[in-house]
Length: 148
Image 1 (cartoon, one colour):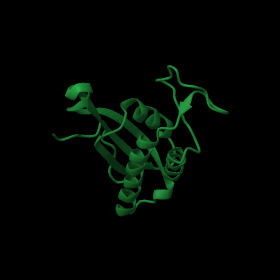
Image 2: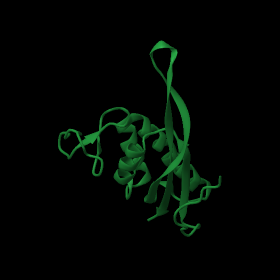
Image 3: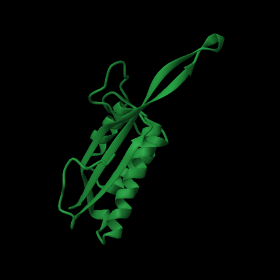
Image 4: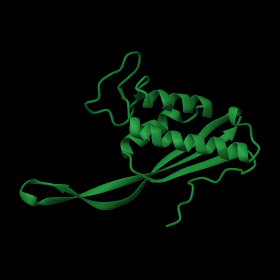
């Protein structure tokens, strides 16, 4: 299945990257995407590394039910697995920018979107040798960075 970007920017001053069918939470991916939108690539990389190291929390704006507040900010969490996957996408956008001859230190994330990927069947082991079916969901994350 071919996945396209939601928007088509001008190719001479933008860098694109996409992570397809990542095994992370859709809600966590959405919250990280809203947190890093508008950041420079260096700042976003540093932010995601701090989240993965449990030094900085991701502010939760939409999915806030039963999520505690963090010091100095609103409610938030430390989604390590999702942060590591999105960090790979940020690094990919940086390397794509340097390949195109753009200044990756001066690029800002202008578009980040999360899409629902396909679901595949798994099994949850139960007692007495039985199993319950479960659906594993995936997420597609697209990112576009533009020279400022």
